[in-house]
Image 1: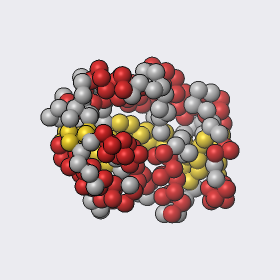
Image 2 (image 1 turned 180 degrees about the vertical axis):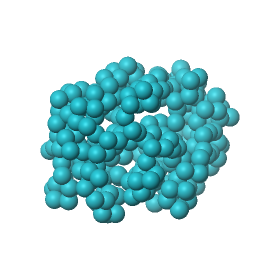
Image 3 (image 1 turned 45 degrees about the vertical axis):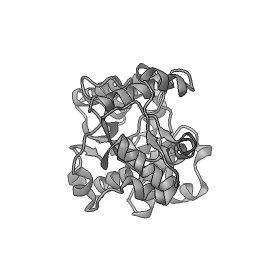
Image 4 (image 1 turned 90 degrees about the vertical axis):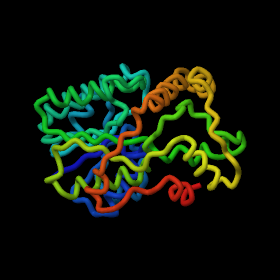
Amino acid sequence: MQILLTGATGHLGTHITNQAIKQNIENFSIGVRNINKVSDTWKQALEVRELDYFNQESMVTAFKNIDLVIFIPSIIHPSYNRLPEVENLVYAAKIANVNHIMFIGYYADQYNNPFHMSPYFGYAERLLASSGLNYTYVRMAMYMDPLVDYLPELAELGKLIYPVGDGKINYISRHDIAKGIIAILSNQNLLGQRYLLSGHTYSMTELASILSNVAGSKINYDPVSLDTFGKMYDEPKGFGPLLASMYKAASMGLLEQHSSDFEKLTGDQPETFEHFLQQNY
């Protein structure tokens, strides 16, 4: 089976590519927009193809002789700006006779989820379902990883300010998400399913306690309002309200989702937040 991973030089794509090389996944190649970002180590280990999510013909060319495309969406916003990329994915897959698409989605995709990117993920899954293509849909919980860089700011502030209230959030590391994806690639019988790669669920009070232990200084949970949070982190313009809408979803209990898919796929337990931060902070 010939495999192509898109978005390979992004944060999650890097984890997947490194694990694919380490696990000797056969016939694994990557598709990127800027080949200059690909390391010499990767170029020696696998095939690199150039593609642009917003250029159909580049995707058709990159998908030639590929059986399975693993698609990682871009991070552009607002959500309607992303729609052409998934439409181009389906178009190119059909023209190039791709047999299967693995789409990497996000768990904030319920019909009543206020997260500004939720419409995109809802549309993407329904487009795949109606496309006639074979597909695997992998939803992932919230990344742990950004807290590593954010922790010094929180330690200086002395408080965790996420506007979540009594809501809880399920977190997983990018490394564990990649591990789950590699497990699927290692057994073709696992394709064609809908998965949720989740880790551990925390209240914000519990998360503040973990952050305090790792930072070595007291961090209390003291949330600001959604509007205040959006204004504090509105760089680039529009990103603050986007983040705030995600935490509104958490306050509604929509980001507590958990499944045992990771354990079933890998045979391991997902990493805890405290251990992850201790290893990476």
